[in-house]
Length: 258
Image (tube, rainbow, N blue to C red; front, side, top):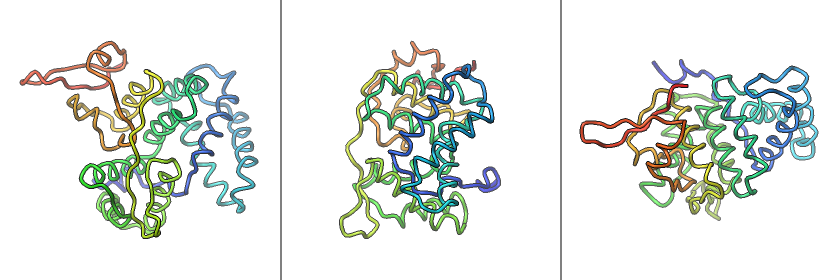
């Protein structure tokens, strides 16, 4: 079965600035303050968040339709979260006030992986390219995405906008000549011990049923902007994961069934 049959909508097809994600998290945190953990937001809260985001973006996105599409992406990441992922989102909102500005990208990234398989595929493609070489071209990314998602007109503008978003978030540096060449930036070190474990759970939940050797888990291409300085003892101590062993006694990590 092709990816387009499983997930017909690319969804993440706008340039999303990091400042907009920050504002979204703050607005959602305020709107859901009276909501019990795991509950779906009521229509009034959803409408209030959307209205607040339209006001916040009015000075930067002039067209009403373009602004609506951007708000859709922002709320899909932080607000309109499926029930299976709400506990992780609620934990992200709980961590938000305690995480310094430089560490908040960990939370945006994990929720974006969960919200958009297309974003996950972009991140995985970029991570694999940067593992093999010190820079890559937009054309290389687009070829990889076409192979996974098929020939789609949407890809012609979704892929460049996704890469432009990653550049705005500071995880990619574009060439100065504007030729569509990008290189990676130094991997981010977590400012709080909870973030790497939280992000690993988000990455695993974005690919249900995944069981990975420990080394592969800590070097997932989709998590290329982050340095995951955690060991097996921390994963053992976490309620999130189940540690298995293969015939060579190599540790395998999967999600614990709750």
